[in-house]
Image 1 (cartoon, rainbow, N blue to C red):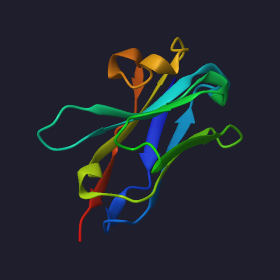
Image 2 (cartoon, one colour):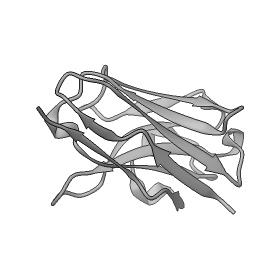
Image 3 (cartoon, rainbow, N blue to C red):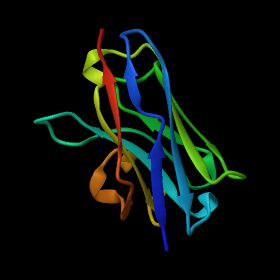
Length: 127
């Protein structure tokens, strides 16, 4: 059974950093693409970043490019999202998602492309 659990969220001051983790069970990262999404109160969920099957391709939302980095550790079955230079507008619940049939990261920021989802972790950027 595919299962994803996010962790690493919290309260951080503007300009600070956090590293989110998405620990997966029930599938191998070499067979699934994984994406990070976020949802702020009153807003729709939006794609933040994604990494392809095999880890060879990534994509980022314009709003986080240059500040966020997605990576993976296949030995730990974990996907990371390193977030630097955090801004208040980065606040929200962050979700990871996985799909076995998504191969092009061009579509990787679309939530409709993903079948499996975690429960989310809260990130609050505030002074």
